[in-house]
Length: 210
Ligand SMILES: Cc1ncc(COP(=O)(O)O)c(C=O)c1O
Image 1 (cartoon, rainbow, N blue to C red):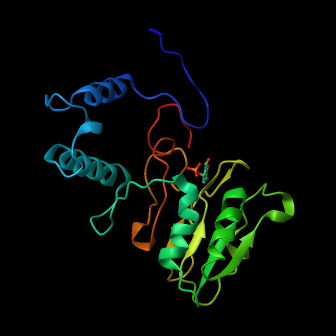
Image 2: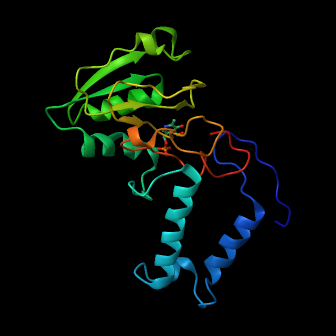
């Protein structure tokens, strides 16, 4: 097929053509090496250059300081529902969850396998049609972290401002890039333990709202 079409879907959407063209070229042969990026050694200089450049670009785009590592992980955002508590929630600890839709409900379920979960607020009473006010959010005494889903893609609500639990590290849920229309990460990285953006939607494809 020669002609490309428009795709306005809210999930993966179209990419800029120069990006696609470069990807196509580099898949065939990168840096004039005669082989594509998928065929290069994952310990070789070419791959090292690409991964380092990708990490730097992400840091620049999302305003991430050198204090944070950018990880390119498999498993999608759903994997982070258990990877986060596996890494940040001690078995005798408690994590606070702001339950505002399907994704946070799933995140709670996974966290419960690892430690205590405290639901600091929820909009379940009205089928997740609103974001509870910060004044109605009740944090536990010393949570290991606070988790929220900045953009509730199924129920159509989003946090306009990030929650501000006093003195705590916030763990924006997935894909977490408030405000949702921007390609930047959390505004307060210093208060963030981990953020799970979904690049193919949150910070990448043109036309995508996430
Ligand atoms: C807010 C949010 N969290 C989590 C997910 C799950 O992401 P994945 O399909 O990458 O597991 C989605 C996917 O649509 C999402 O919109």
